[in-house]
Length: 264
Length: 200
Image 1 (cartoon, rainbow over the protein chains, first blue to last red):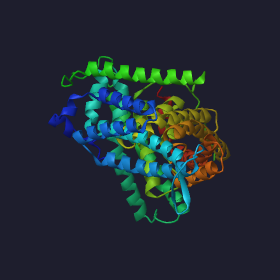
Image 2: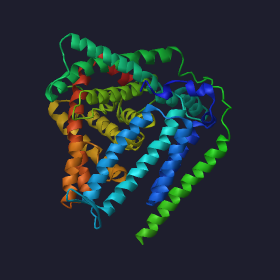
Image 3: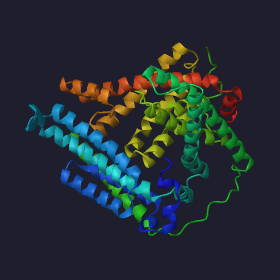
Image 4: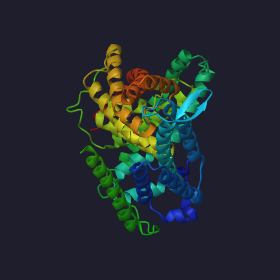
């Protein structure tokens, strides 16, 4: 998590083209892309959506996080192609055979459609993941009307995680020094989890108590708390919100309409 | 070997107080490190709901549900986008743990086992439709998916195969997490339990 671009303010300072797009527009874009990919089963359309999302990512920034997310999903898509290609309930037409094992067209098409949808969502989310920072999200969400308490809960996670990971490494090292070695059989590994997790959880909750008392002392619950100063570097945010929301509503409505018509 | 259930006026009573506001991110953090620890040790379980369990046990089902929801949203927006939709499962787990704990089903080792089975059923029931929609019924865990493949190959319905795939993984994971949460909760200092319970 520490290698996340969300943790740095790097992208905010350089003012690239994607910094002019606000976080809510980016989230609505993910929603619209996901709904479009679920709108039909046309593989050409799915390929178009994957290309569009991929190009958007190429013209913004590609990070190791997106590559990791893609790597895991591609492996799962591969297993899905094998399982559905062999055993999908509607399999009829043999497409090819490997070592005498038949792979069917229907199952492979079904798995390709599902895999394409997953890729669309990952690539579209990747754009959000690599082009926004925690502070940008926090400021914008609060300006958009979300309560500052909710914003704090959402955003503090990203700052607390590296701290907890650091604590875990320290506890693991301490336990190894004391002779608790977590590198053996599964049962021993399961047993070795407790000496790490118990102190880690207690330390984490203890730090939460301290943080909570600090917040109260600093007057976080003060009703006269001032909202953050508005940022004005986003272009046409309102227009994007209305446009993308309308697309989402139309897509959901159309999908529901076709489902209801399909019942009769 | 017994722990006291939470005695609050209503388990559904919830206020985003300073204590809850700091408990929720901590629970999300615990989920994250427990999952990382399980992955690091190559354990056959996820352990990624330990924080949600503890938040529900300490501050009630609503806090647990919020912890679970935020956990998946943050995880989805930073590491694995598809896991965002499984936020619904995490909400279900948080609520189930909160209710079971408030009703005393985490008070002894025997009861914890029953609770773990109920939570595994809740988790599998919510996750199965999502698995079918996004992954054709698979879970992404090799041995669970092998079971899925065998069942589908024997012409059993995809829904049943997917539920079985998810349930066998969930039962093992939730039993481990429930016992971990039970043991850790008993080790927590009373001042800490009261701090998160009474600050309402």
